[in-house]
Structure formats: structure tokens, C-alpha cells
Length: 103
Image (cartoon, rainbow, N blue to C red; front, side, top):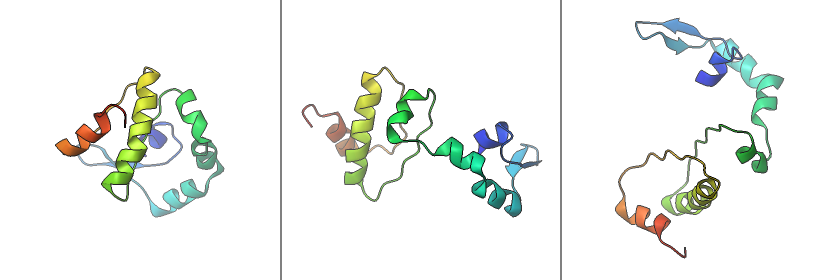
């Protein structure tokens, strides 16, 4: 949402000492239904790595699904010289599984 407000695609109101963003319901609905949003967010999967800076946020049903999906993405990104910032709790067993050779 920050990116969209910075690009002036989504209207926001700033409040408080920290100038936090607030949105009106009507502005959000209008934005979600807009063609601009769909044009900017609808891309074939293959285009993700070709577009430059991309923010990827993923959600999983369980740890097994997370490991399967993230592992292939992480390997492809690393091989192409990309940077990865990965935030996760310190589950040692999961980290060992994703880093194990031959998996």
C-alpha cells in the first residue's frame, strides 16, 4: 500500500506524530476496482524475475508447502545473483531441510 500511495495511485490521509497512512473505504474500493491496479499487478509468473525490483510476500498452509515453494524460488533467485531477505522464526530443522544438498 505504501508503494501505491507513493506513486499517487491510492489516496491516503496522514495522521498523528508519525504521519501514519489512513484510507477511506470508498477510496479503497475504487482503487481495488480500478484498471490501473489490475494492469500493474497482473503478470505471468515468468515475468517476475525480468521486471527488476520485486517485492514478494508469500503465505502457506503448512511448513511442508512453505519449504517446497520457497526452496525453488530461493535457489532460482540465488543463481541469478538476486538478493533475498528472509524473515522467519528460528526453526533449526526447517533451515537444515532447505539448505541440504540434493533435496
